[in-house]
Length: 365
Image 1 (cartoon, rainbow, N blue to C red):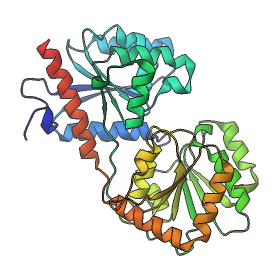
Image 2: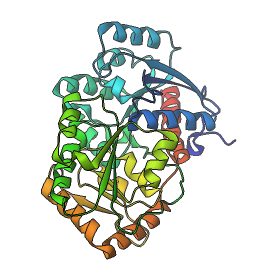
Image 3: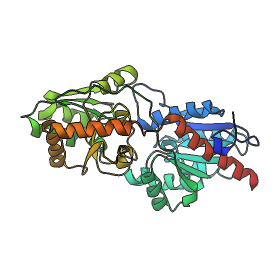
Image 4: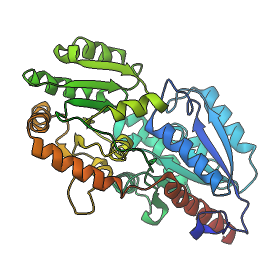
């Protein structure tokens, strides 16, 4: 195998080891998340490229862990050899900025920022900023997130890199003539916007449709209870988190992916749907348009609406359900976009180049 930063493998002059600090629930099937999936696939991809990946999974309520967990993280980091390359998940970094900053001179820290936590919660702004400013490099998942991190934390642009999430190849979903089978894949929580989707669906009682909500039911019990009591709930199936073959089956049976999020750094479920030729209805917010992309002929595989706007979402759904020509155009564009998506190997190679660059730069100083 060819080594060196350009090839995505470790340089011959650099110890090919990366220590990856992860949330403790990374492999918990009851708590699937885009961040956990990205972390797992990146670790596997780096291993395939020849890196020795040493995982350090730390349970403890990230990004707001108790002091005992922060002490355990500090102990783990202090036990690593000097100049070790350490990739820290952003969920951990947002709660451990002081711990990381205190060790930045000894270790080669790279933060993997899945989102901008400081935008979501003011109490995380200081710690996230400390972690990012102490890092030798920052990896993130979209151009939008890169720009936002640079602006919010005054980071040097040359140190912030994008490794877009990959997606696995999958058979094209058959689709139905009516297009009435709707799917929303996201943890049930206010920022994912299922309340807006339920409000939109309640305006479509005159049309045939079914909708599946696939995602964790534990994030916000009051939010889930309100969804169960919603007038549209009789036609919505709340299935909880789906993974593996059950998630594949949900995609296979879907005609349209609906993602009404109020914000997304990227939107991995969008590319998972497009990998199956399933069109998308999503919000025009943050990094979602990047995930949607365009087919090679320039046609969009999705309808985009403003976030938090139930009327606009209902109008788009009505157009989808009543306009066969629109469904045909979007399906054709989704099949075209399917051929342009990158795989997880590409993501790993991009990340490996950044890790190798950090190691080489540190050696040269």
